[in-house]
Image (tube, helix red, strand yellow):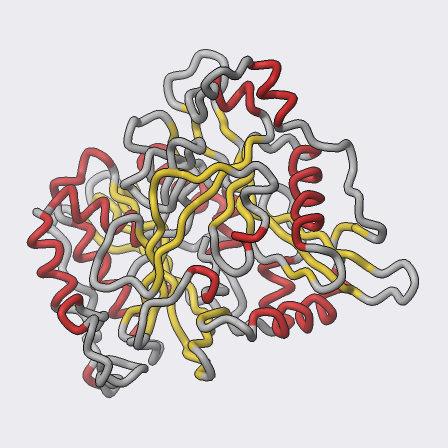
Length: 434
């Protein structure tokens, strides 16, 4: 199980979700982190030996169309799931991280801020806010026991972290309870201790104890076996800063003033009835989103509680806007993005890169191109430096026209213990992982 996170890049660098890219814009989760830790501790061949022991699609089975779609292994009787935690090296101990505790939340924030995903050139590192972490880790029905830390016994210092949250993911016509594993982070000084594999096994054990046997995750490297492969695209909002910090480069035959002019946006959204989402909009947005996501092969199964949690605007975490028809007052369109800044390492002028990530967008009356241009405008108003988007869902239809540039890296999506018969196109995927 896993997820993926990585830093973003400029159009020439790819801010994918994974470690192969040179960017901060990769924020899908931890598989990417998991992969990074495995790269720290294992050879490539051993890493694949690990995944070949797991209930995931295997490369050797890729062309075998006779294998059934669905769970690869049946659930184990709960009485047979290992009841005791896995053994850690003797100087470390497990701890459950209560994200409601300000002290614990500060510890988790500091561990991630100083040790989490960096781009390949060590220029950027994800800097998830405490508010973002609380939002990401406490969805409806979350399990506190899935927020797992490792402490040094002597100092009680938090030195490693991994999490899971529950989700309902629909694969074609089947809604499956899954876990999304995230924020795998081991302190830089302990990367040789082989903590990551034990942490992955431990979070898997705790997920199984809740009678959940599947997971969805992403990574920037190829593991057995992606259900689809996506690409990150980046749209400059503050091109001078992006160039100054090395995220982007000045194009051939381009001056800074021409570049700034190229990416300039209108001062305000163009669509009549475009406004911020409010609590009263949750039922209408849920209907809009469920109807839209139904067309994709793999997508979340959101109810009103999920929409309220994941999409109701939270300052500095997630922004959502909709179009309310001035005539009928129907909610016809919706767009959203979440906030994931990165620390800028070693720059004298700037310390933070403020990145917006495209989340869920639904256009029924307003052209998607126009809706997303309005999203760029409000992101610019909120002082974001860059707007990142994957080529999932219908995003490919607006990326080039709205002056997004492709990143270098790719983001691979995986399902754990669930086989999808054939690889999907990015446009068949309706799932965005944090």
